[in-house]
Image 1: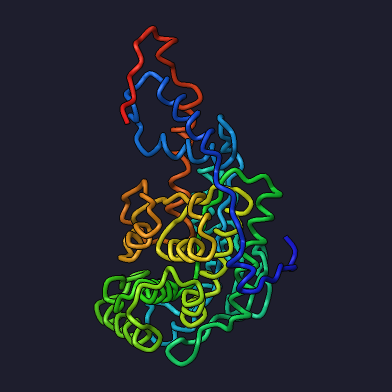
Image 2: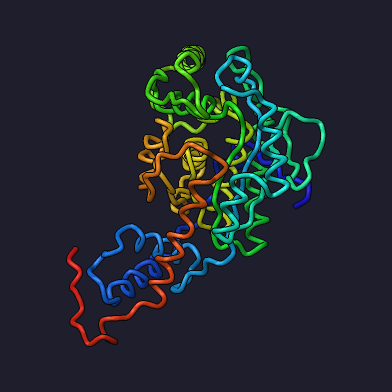
Amino acid sequence: MSDYRNTYSRQEIFSLKVNAPDHKIYDSIRKRWDGISKPIDGLGNFEKVICRIGAIQKKELPTFDNRYIVIMCSDNGIVDEGVSQTGREVTYQVARMLGQGTSTANTLAKKAAAKVMAVDMGIDCPEKIPGVIPLKVDRGTKDYLKEDAMTEEQVLMAIGSGIDVAKTLKDEDADIVVSGEMGIGNTTTAATLLSLLVGDDGSSFVGRGAGLDDKGLLRKKEVILDAVTKYGDGKFSLDDKDKVFKYLCEVGGFDIAGLCGLFIGCGLYEIPVVIDGLITAVAALLARCFVPGTREYMIAAHKGREKGLIRALDLLDLEPFIEGNMALGEGTGGIMLLPLIDMALDFYKSASTFDAGGIREYTRFS
């Protein structure tokens, strides 16, 4: 895609409208499931996700061949406060591997028959990284204990970039998108933002990220508490779009803002989108706040190890498929969901029916 980015005002984003998926097709797919030779809802949530994907695509036989992994990469100024085991240079190093096709996400994506699209939203480097889409807003955010992480203009640019990425995926006829991220320090950013959004003091959502020791974890807790004290009012804020936007500017990241735009764009362009871990779930929560209908296009992949992930998914009323205890990032949990959906969809399309087997069909009771 080109470097051109749509620019939106805050109110333009807030006024965006998303069409609902086709509930008639959802019901039609569920009826087809009930005619397959198995107990009612025997495949549980896997039946529902095929119904949801079909309703989004407006197809009674959903397609699942053209899959993309979008990995938003950015550095976070809060790393200067000692909240990570590694330095910000690792963001650049992993992004380079993503561009070369040698990172963890690339390896898993090959097996899942998915294409990886890495995006530079704000890596602290001056040059374009080969194989990585250059949509850099700035070379990382500010240290939000000292000043706001981003300006309003930067946040709007990042959200607009995410929406544009979704438009590109629509033009590529993407059947499904997995959201991912890479940025040293971004579990701290996401946990701080989630704490502000729900009025928590920060203690509920602090995790070890990429492997902090006890001393590092204590420092991370202190940083999040200091940020919540500095910016928060202790109130649940998801119903207040302006306040949520303010928090995003104050403590967010270019990756989170870009992912928020991606979730909004997938709603606008009617593409199913998979939530991976904490960072992507917080971005999805922002998208649902700014443009409520976007939630209908989201699929939760896994529980993860970061403490805030389940809270974010609960607020989205989404149930994850995989336990896993994962904490890798790069969309890897979402990638691992794809083969499971593959099997469910293949079963839906090719399994024997009650009629074919001469078996009396089960009755669905509401």
